[in-house]
Length: 64
Image (cartoon, rainbow, N blue to C red):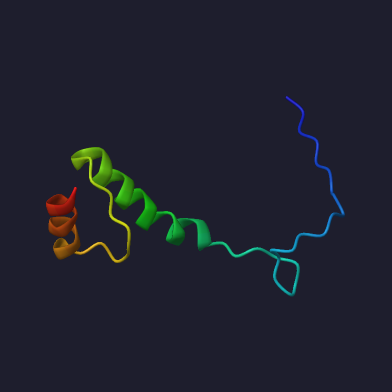
């Protein structure tokens, strides 16, 4: 198997000042939506605001 590496000189508006991307953003930003989706799949009720607290879960069940 051969691997080819190509460098593209296309500006990316999301890069930092040094032309780099952050490493930990994906791992930290993916957790709240995943937890909200897990709750919806388990109960059929959506939470519309963060943080997901027990009070909000109970309220979501009451109002459907």
